[in-house]
Image (cartoon, rainbow, N blue to C red):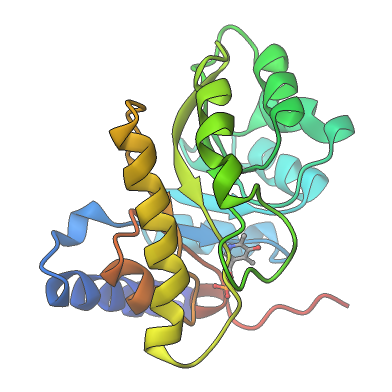
Length: 229
Ligand SMILES: *Cc1c(COP(=O)(O)O)cnc(C)c1O
């Protein structure tokens, strides 16, 4: 087996163990393989090992990989910051966008979604306490932004996403994930049918699954340390 296939199995085992510990069905957590900075060969190795869904942060790199794997029935998720002048290629090539943080971007994605494709599946990114970057809407804005996004015809609102600051302490890891889940539950209680909590990366899979993640976004634990040089 390739190292990537071994790593995928190890990550699946971490998800399974964390789900069991939380009393959740392991199938309720989907693994998104974050392939940013890695070559097409790494994506193909993971796909050969049975991994169906991939995440990318940079528009051109992502679009190139989507085009190069057309016909393989892979699912592509855009998870990085998105500027308004880059929405068109994302809307034309990706299946999901996790990083909706303002309405303007969502409106452009909706308008630009080709009519022969199913609506773009989207998550609103929320800036929970201890967020690494300043991206994401504030918790107070989340409900209103979700309502507006849910009304756009080219998009299907699926849930929320967050990227908390890395820390080694499990309790500290869980707090922002819990906060995101509470916002998720509040928005569901307000009548929006969200089903996706996109949270958890290589170092905090267990905390995210314990707090209800339905998609974990994993790069390093599958492909290795990234080299941005
Ligand atoms: C890079 C990235 C990941 C993957 O992080 P790892 O620590 O490598 O698992 C997940 N989500 C987002 C938004 C990212 O940018």
